[in-house]
Structures are given as C-alpha cells and as structure tokens.
Length: 199
Image (cartoon, rainbow, N blue to C red):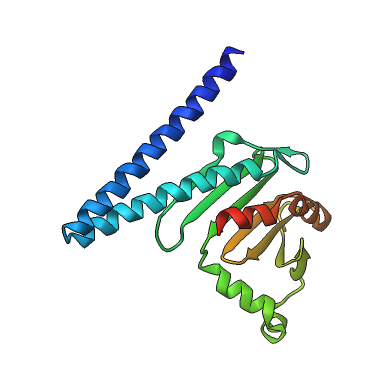
C-alpha cells in the first residue's frame, strides 16, 4: 500500500514540475516577444512544444501493449523524447530479451512518411520497388509495408512493419517470427487512439 502511495505522489510531483516548466516557458516567450527579442521567444516556444511532446509520448506509452506475442515489455527501456521542432514526438518500447526481441517505435512528422505514402499510393512505384521480401498489407484500415528479413546464418526470419498514419509513423519489429505473429501483434495496438494523441 505504501509503494502505491509513493508512486502516486511521484507521478503527481512530476506533473506539477512539468506544468511549472510549461508556465515558465510561456511566460519567457511572452516577455521576450514583448521586448522584441524574437530569438529568445522562439527558443522558449520550442521548449514548450518539446514539453508537450514528452507529455503526449507518456500518454502514448500507456496505450501500448504490455506484451507483443509472448514477449513482455522492458519498461526500463521505454524512451520518450520531444524535439519541439521538425520531427516532434518520438516514442519507443522494447520487448523480450537479447535472445528474441520486438520493438514499437512511433515518430510524429517522420521524414519517411512521404516516401512510404508514395510507395503505398502509386501502384507503379510500389510494383517497381517490390520484391519477394516486401509486401503491402492493411492493418486496422491503414495501408502498411511489411518487410521480411531472413538471416542466412541462423535461418531465423525477422519482420518489420511500417504503418504510416496521417503524419505519424509506427514501426513494429519482431525477431524470429512469422507474418501471422507480426500482424496479430500489430492488430493489438490501438492505432486510432495513438493517431488521435500524436497528431
């Protein structure tokens, strides 16, 4: 019971600190803008956006599954960053051990989105670039690219699934798996909720 109270107090204190940082940055942006110091105003606003991205990333982590297939999450490896600039939000979670791993990465405003959408929307380009180790599938209504990589040394097959959703890219990777494993895992991720939070 005491550990639960401590955890709740820790979460609340982190939220208070984040709110204080946000208030400090918005105040600095206003003051700098009013005095004509646009460079400092921009810097303070970038800090605010970074803080917002981090908070959104923490909410996205709560939506990710605790397991991918039989692999349990490694919460200590969770990573959330916000650049407040061109790329924005970055969230990653890893599953399993060194023997067999999986991961989910979510990038808002990913530079890859345009290239992936071109491949997915124009059959001619997709047809020219496609090989037997790549195919286009649908996951929860989103066109996605599934890449298969066979390790010739071990004979194990690894998969990578890239799901572009508006301006957000979700990448799911699974070692030593099947196409069924990765599509089942992808369908366990609440994509629509992630898109709502990340946009």
